[in-house]
Figure 1 (cartoon, rainbow, N blue to C red):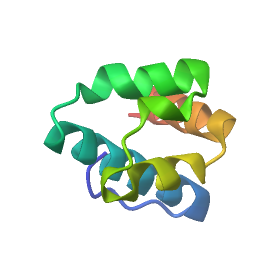
Figure 2 (figure 1 turned 45 degrees about the horizontal axis):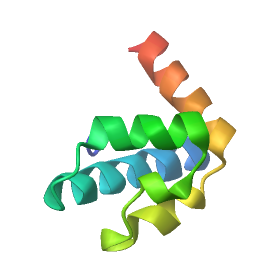
Figure 3 (figure 1 turned 45 degrees about the vertical axis):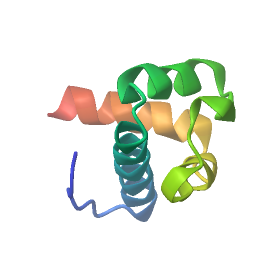
Figure 4 (figure 1 turned 180 degrees about the vertical axis):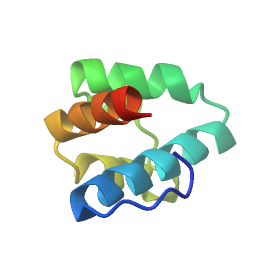
Length: 77
């Protein structure tokens, strides 16, 4: 999903937030797949780092919309 451009503003916001959060967790030494899946399953923002504003960007996106986005991206690509 890195640097992919979406026509839908909501999808673009989610994509940007996911990419920033993923990179921030990687930079801080966390396992981004585990952390992001923990957040998606629990909606517990403590799975997200505050580094590079990742937590704020992710929590600004609707939790259900993140899950829909990931499923849509998976099945359409």
